Length: 194
Length: 100
Length: 226
Image 1 (cartoon, each protein chain N blue to C red):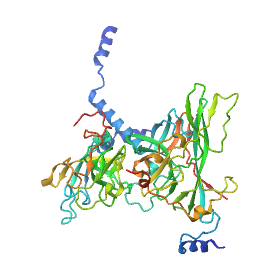
Image 2 (cartoon, helix red, strand yellow):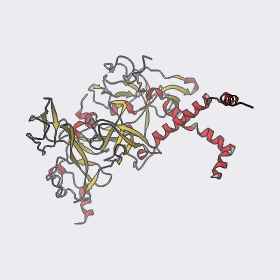
Image 3 (spheres, helix red, strand yellow):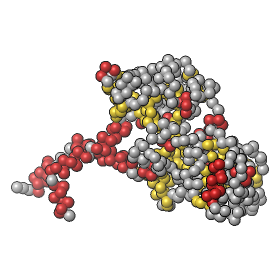
C-alpha cells in the first residue's frame, strides 16, 4: 500500500499521468473533430496525387473533417473517406455525386439503366477520367460507411488549399437532383444552409 | 466407402451429378438458427419458433438455406430434398431483385 | 482569537469554490476517457422495438455491447477470423438512416445463399372486440381457435393474403457483407428490405442483456447431428 503511495508521489509519475490524461481527449479529437491522413492511389486525380505516375512515393497529405459526418451532414460534391463495401478493412476516398432520391445514369461496369438512390444512401465516384472502382462498380453506398470529409490539402505546399465542392466533368450531367433541394441531407436537421 | 474417395469424386465430376441422397453426406452438415414469428393476440404477444436450416459442406464454406426444402419435418429424419441439392436455386445478387 | 463569530467568519472567508478551469479540464478528460472505453471496450445500449422479440423485449432492453469481438488491429488479415459470425446478435448503423442503429441477428455471411423470406403460411385477419381488424402472422401448421369461451377475440375472419415478397427467392451475400434479420420475422425491417449490409456498418456484438432479466444473449446456431 505504501509502495503505491510513494510511487505516485514521484514527480516523473505525476507528470506522466498528467500527460496521459490528455490521450483520450486527443483520440476523441482525431475521431470526431479533425484528423490527418495521406491519400494513396490515383482514383481522385487530378484533385489528389496528380503526379502519381511520375513520383509514386509522393502522396498528398490532407485534413479530414470528422465533425460534419458525426452530425450526419452530407452534401453533393463533398470529397469523403469511406469504408469500401467490398473490403471492410479498406478506406477509400471518393466524391459524393448524388444523395437519396436522386436519379443517376451510371457508367460501366454498371448497366446503363438509371438508378434511384435509396434512403440513407449516396452515390460516390472517383474524379479520375479513367474507370475507377466506385458506385459504378458497387452501387449506391449507405451513408454509414462514410467516416470523414476531406476538407483541405496540407501538402504539397504549392497545391495547398480547400478541397473544392465541385463535380468533375465526368459526373456532371449524369445526375438528376430529385432528392433534397438543399445541398445537405435531411439528417443534419439542426443545421441551416451552410 | 472411404470418405476421401467421395470428396475427390465431387471435385472432378461436373456439378449435375448427385453425390448420394444423404444430406449429411460428409463433409456436408446441417445447422440451424432459431428465429420466431410473433403476433399480438388478446393483449399478449405470442411467438412461435421458426427453425431456419442451413446446409454447409465443410468448415469455412458457404452455407445454403434449406428451411423450405426439407422432405420431412421431424427432428428424427431431416432430409434435404435431393432435387434441391442437385439443382441449387439461381441465387441472384440483391440488386437484381430490387430494381432502380 | 476569538469569539465563535470570528472563527465562523474566518472559515467562510477562506472557502473558495473549486477553480473553474481545472474542473472543466478534469471533466473533459473524464468524459473523453469514458467515451474511449465505451467505443473500444464495452458499452451499454438500449435496443427498442418489436424486431428482436422474444430475445429482446419491445419496451427497450439495456444490453451490453462490445466492438472487441470484431476488432482487427492489423489491416492485412489472412485469416479474417474477426468478422461477425452466423447467429451473432449485433448492433449496426442503419443502412436507411445513418443516425440510427439497429439490433439484429446475423443469419448469413459472405458467400451464403439465403432465402429472402423463409416464412410460409397465410396471414389471417383477426377482428377484436373493439371491431379493429389486423393481420395475424401465424405459422401455417398452427390452428387458432375461432370460438374459445376464454378468448378475448370475438371472432376471426379468414382471408388469404398473397405470397410474401421474397418467398422462394435466394440471394447470395456478397463479399464484405452480412445478412441481418430481426428474430421477430413478422415485424422487423432488416436485410429482407434493405439488402445485405456491409461489414463496416456492424459496430459491435450484443453480449448480454443487463436490465431487465439479466441474461447472456446466445448465438443460437446449433449443429444438427444425425
